[in-house]
Image (tube, rainbow, N blue to C red):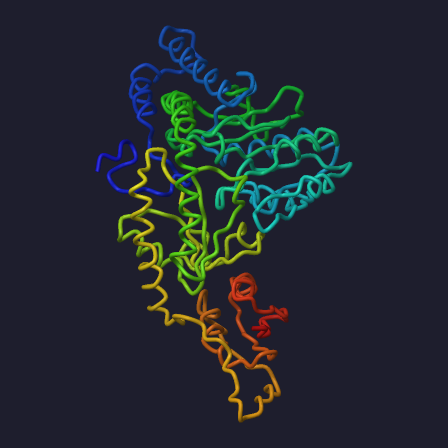
Length: 474
């Protein structure tokens, strides 16, 4: 199919990992020959390796928008996040042990926050809107006199929503609190705006080799590296540098960003096509994430009455590689923390993140295949093909009296999306104004039953333990 460096079939999951950019491959091969020596040594081979390392650092710093001596290379983006959080918290331990994060941060941030609480620290999670964005005022209100550090991603990895980093950074600066930005998803598209203090990113997100991360600590930010001292990378990332991979990462960041700038408009138009057509082609589907403030290449939607693992398998067999934050996948027994924080439907979740060399015809073919794939999964699960309107009483008969008690659906022990499917099956029998209660111990039900009510214009009464009550209003 002539798909360039992203392979012969449509790969729609670059938000997880982008295949190696051609420039990265060229730089990697060259650096394997020239950059194998220890850059800390003074002999000829060491000096040559040092020149390569310094050039890579300067190129990466220019792309980030920082000074070269503020940037170090780490073995991964996760290591950059962990080192940045730990170092900034340790550097400001005299201020206090309070950490502020958003509820939709990458798991690397949230895991570091959990570790911080285990050592006596305190963490405040700032909630987000249904579109997945924090409110700058709410975030600012979470800052305290003992806040040592705040963290906010530049763009969400699951739904593509771009966060108001500049506004939050301004509030943090006014409060005297450094802000760490996880820029893994956005750095391909340009520097992060705002007066942030620390930044982390990962090369495999923009087409660089895996195993290279970036950590930036701006001058004036108190920072105490965690762990034993090491003379490399200013003591902030111990161990021998993977110089060939670092050179390839820096070279590919420049090249991939130029490609991204050239294609951003086309990619945004293609994801707009998906945003517009998916709900029309696939009934009972919710597109999630901010429709305006978003990454140009990423779109996420959720489908009622769909097992996410089965849907991803069907799409894979049709030649499309996509990912999911659904609770109905083998890799996630609980709903995605991002979808949970947003309060949106989690079942049948699909994230499409388009590569830079995507073709419009591949997107159109995805749209052609998707309805049949969803319908096939719904049929396998016995989902209702359509939801019947309430039965009207005959003119010669008086209206039926409401049931003395709510209709009960026992879905205990059943997993997403079965509880919602069983709710939908019995709902046509519920009289107007009456209620139905669903018993479910599946964590996804806490998201999916309220979302089902919103999508079907019914009233979600509430939850008591494992009992979810719904009132028929139409």
